[in-house]
Image 1 (cartoon, one colour):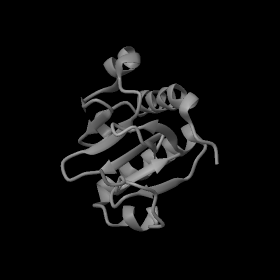
Image 2 (cartoon, helix red, strand yellow):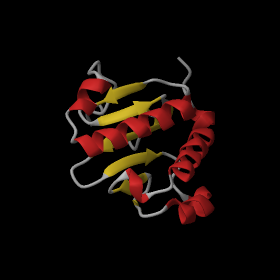
Image 3 (cartoon, one colour):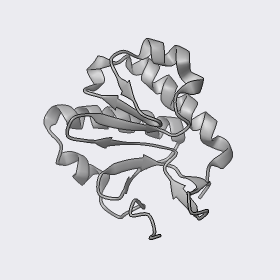
Length: 139
């Protein structure tokens, strides 16, 4: 089994976001502000396309310790994908109030930020960070 390719890089988050379309870039910049406020951490690139904030430790399927962002996002072709690491089971009320979205195990898929209530989204991000706090790595 090889090492994870998704690791922190030295690529500039600003340069990465500048490559996005105008509307997507504005959405990404708003998400950066929310995630920085929730984590108290600056944005950093993870791999080629994930903007992450903070770090937490977990053990992967091969029993190897790994690090991953506390929260993060990626501007994908069809969706703005937010990584809400504890998943959504503990956030039923917020999810009901959020607006138009889809979810995966720990992924929140948004077509555009205007489709959701930004205050509810920020509460969801705050809740996610709080839930991950026991596994958080302080640098």
